[in-house]
Length: 187
Image (cartoon, rainbow, N blue to C red; front, side, top):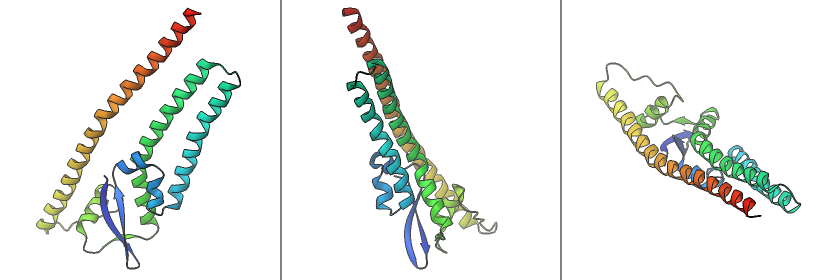
């Protein structure tokens, strides 16, 4: 999960998020639809249409007598593109969503030091703590430290399975090409 902060506009309160979005990685187009983010939904929809249509065109090309090796390479490339695009969306979606909310007039609540500290740390707003207020400075550092350590743990929990998935994909590609070469030799 990303870091949750509260924003308000005209008396309404809404959650905004910063950091890596696990929900975007696994749920994709559902995240902007749950957040009622039309622009984000349209971007996700466009990518999903492309990611669905491209393998369908490859399948049609294969049945029309296309080169199976080229189709296999393009199909594996489309799987790689799907995974990379999902990962990139998970990295940037919360940042774009929160920035759009701030540009739309949403602001942190006046007495919410946590949201102010986190937004400042991620570079969304400028938040200066008075140099004389030692308690507030210490609280600010604690908020930022907690968020950074939580994000670090999340990245480690993500990187290890990612390495496993990449190695599995590489082994799968090598195995498929070895199988194709064996079939060619057997003919």
